[in-house]
Image (tube, rainbow, N blue to C red):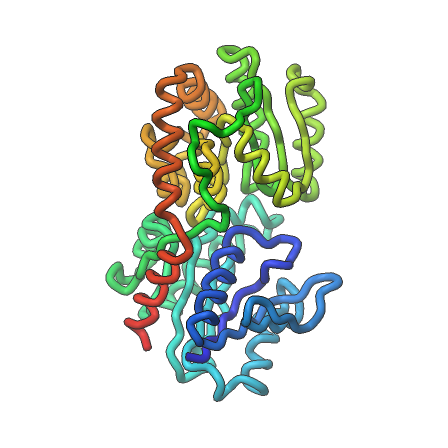
Length: 367
């Protein structure tokens, strides 16, 4: 097949995250199976117009906001008769490919934005986005959909999509699970990691507050904050860390390399994940593969990637509840070992081979 994949950023984009790991791994599997894949994405400062990676091609047009119109123009001029199928990946806003192609279109959702609009956009753009999202979702009803979690499927059904028209695929991780979680070298002191981009919708401040509350029951607890700080929220986190009564027990690492990320995921005793919502929660599974369970908020995506009480803990979305969950996980070594082992065992089932198999079954129902 010739597959045109529309999405607003590729993996080299400064704001790339788990969604780009998934779609480019799928593209690599598709190319290895003999399919031809072209991505049309938005450009960014310093980006070259085209790239070739793992046997698939990337075409960069416009920027974060103009790529949607630029993609339509480019399609009309250069790709009109090329694709056998179009993947319209919705990362905030769809490309509305159904309105300018006669061929099959599959919508690919990691998650809906909904309340994220109020965390990531300034007023009144946040309100406009929030009110517009249900309206443009109506225009996509009836198209086949791929989602990465049951939470996302339920969210789509609430907005009028047919449940039987939505295929849920597994995600996957690039990290190789460690051979034995009981032998992983943990930090000498109990250490919890806040890993990921430091921005409003990730609620890093909640993780800092939960750490401070948990210190009352776990006096030796340490916190590592790793990730790129973004804008005003990143500065707020920096100020909160500086004012924390436990500042000597907090390490701020900033953006980390893949090697540093691996070391952090292995040496930490737990990770905290407090996003407003996720498609799945790739970091949760990555950490589990390295012998580190998670304590997460009970929100879309995270309640899918953690089986509460079995592979980690899912708590109400407050720092106090998160702190209580962290204490529950860490103060009982026998319980911790059971959860750690169960999380690691589940991570071994979450592979990109399975993700690709699920994806192709969904595509086969369309083509």
